[in-house]
Amino acid sequence: MSSLLRFAPSPTGALHLGGLRMALYNHLYAKKTGGKWILRIEDTDTTRFVPGAVDGIRQSLEWAGLEYDYGPGKGGPHGPYFQSERLDLYRSYTTKLLSSGHAYRCFCSIETLTALREKLARTGSGQSYDRRCLHLTEEEVARRVRAGETHIVRLNNGARIPRTSMPDLVFGHLRDSHGSVATDPVLLKSDGYPTYHLANVVDDHSMGITHVLRGEEWITSLPLHLDIYFALGLEPPQFAHIPILRNADGTKMSKRNGDVKVEDYIRNGWERSAVLNWIALPGWGSLHEAEPSSEDSTVADTESAPVVSGAHDAHPRIVSVKDAPESTKVMDMGELVAEFDISVLTHRSSSLDRGKLAFLNRQHLLRAAATPAGLADIASRIRLWMDGNMPLGEISPEYSTPEYIQSVISMLDSRVINIHDIVSLAPYLFVEPDYTSELAQSMIKRATPEQHQEILSTVHAVLERTPDSWDAGTLHDLLTKEKKRRHNLFLSVVRHALTAMKDGPPLVELMILLGKKRTLARIGALLSKT
Image (cartoon, rainbow, N blue to C red; front, side, top):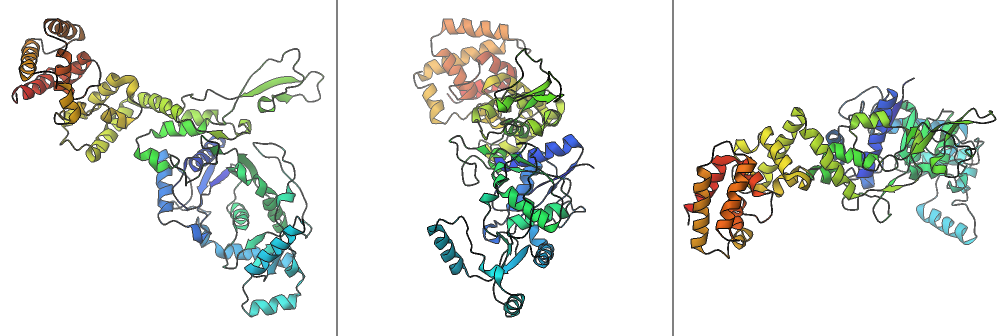
């Protein structure tokens, strides 16, 4: 049977990097195992619902190239894909639990429950509820329901539920932690909506989910979820709890923190392949062959413990060990799928290093620029961004051809981190220089009008006599010769004429990229104004 997974975000805001990583891992596992995955929207918490959040989540997944097989906008055999549209299903399963004695109705008010919790806490009790409504007679419960009394439905922890556990695909054997489960947890709220725990179990079962990949923070809820599965007589899926991503200061990544929303990375021009590469690698592991040493009977580091075959052999043979790859290993989606192995994810939470994203983004940008299709995509995205962000006038089509963009990327070299840098570092490569800026004026303030005129006239005349097919050697010799004949203002005046910016690539490289016609046109335009 092929695997079926689900990514189940809540529409409480924009998708953040931790959510994108979880979607990515579900996508990788499905592709690795020949399975499929579902996008399910867990929108039963109406108090936290944010309008537009579902569209934002779908747009972020689409940008990342994480195409779900079933879900909103696609349909499929497992719908509906919004929990708010599955309320009858949750009520049906709740009725089954009530009938079997694994659940009961609780009529206690919020004030009563608060007082009970405080009283139990003062006495040192580990309970959070005294279970008083469990002992109501059937007649009393029926009467109060007919009267329309507000109530919730609780799981009956005292019912005979086997306290079993199951191995986790990441952490292996997990110790039983039923002690962390609240006393008779709520399954159905007074508004008829299920709690996360009931809805999660019912949906995963009814949708046929075979593998649940979710954040490590849900480990403490696993005993409760298993109890619900067993109370309903259902077979649970396999679980894999993924160590979470944290902020650089060690705090849990949250939608409320800055620099974590996927939409920000889209808007700021980061390559999707680089972002996926960046968020995939923290906690990533890999298996490789290893020869045992003469003292390999035990391995102290449990994070790199070997997989051992022949457990009954006198001398077990180590066939593979777990390592983490380079934290900046450049991997595209195909490579991520090929190397993904959930069983060797590390057990530690990880933080993201923005410096590594910068490195990876440049590598992915260069990879893309090396192919005609990738180069055309970069050129079109740069042009789209320029149209909305460059106030200096109409951009000539010759400045946005794939060939020209490739030359720009090559010339700017290591200074280009993402596509926005290509424009922000050197806007003069796409539009005419802005000579009116304060920076441009400061470049020539030491030169008198006569010196400025003399330098530009001389350079224009010299360059005009050169062959149309410029080469670096010829231009370097000409500029060096003229600089020696003039003074130290020479290069500054020429750079001002070509760029109106102090920093930039060497003048020779810049002139070759602009070409003879555009170089002379810029110098000539300034000469006509002096």
